Length: 352
Image (cartoon, rainbow, N blue to C red; front, side, top):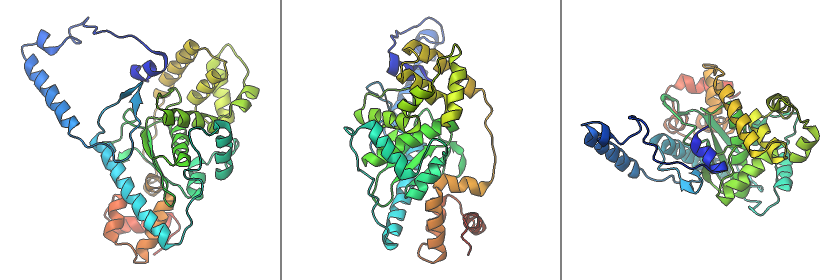
């Protein structure tokens, strides 16, 4: 976890700290300092010319905006906008009803009651955690990818964003940064679902460890935590132990969430002080980062996850029926081979 994120929660003073040659201004340590300074200025100028995100951007540390979005983030938002617009037209053509839960609550709504309502709508309980599939079945387009389209040279950075939501009565969409850890992805999904229930589109930096200053982000974080780990049930299940991480691991298995979310909820319940929470949180982050991540897998299963099964199935059907051009379908899916398209359809139970 970055220091800046920790500062947001506990506060930390910092000074210029020119204690080493590496950390001093270039112009003080190198005859090429002016060139380095010019390069930095040019880089900042280029970043400042990037357009803002086309949906509200709530990525902040403390009260500070984190900066202009990268081309990778922008392109991901743009393609998801195209997918959402396409599915909205498709839903109208299929005479689908607007989804009543979109925009049904506000930031003044009770978090515990709203979380219970969302669990009921999803058919979600503590024993069965098919979170993404349940949201997809309810009518939400759930997409998860760690790259831009299918370009494995353009990786998405979880430090820049963890997800975003695009509200809409016919085609609500959530995107999860698949480059993040699996455990973090579940919290992000819960956070973005909170945005859908609010009817508020936004790019987010959803993390269980952070208490955002922004009212909407703070509410969505609290809702996500309560949705995944109801505080009343946690208090009944929690057993104070000398080894807090062992207890967190036990509860993580019980609630089927990450140990990081559990640590935060133990802190919320009063089982850990702020200092104890941060000590255990950073220890657990280091452990999780050391775990090797898998690679490869079935391309078509991966592709369905990247664009969402609801969206992919509708697009394949529409294209095979001649309602959508293959060219447009390929653009939204991120590939150009007809056989790949047909194989994706077969993996979704749709045959030409």
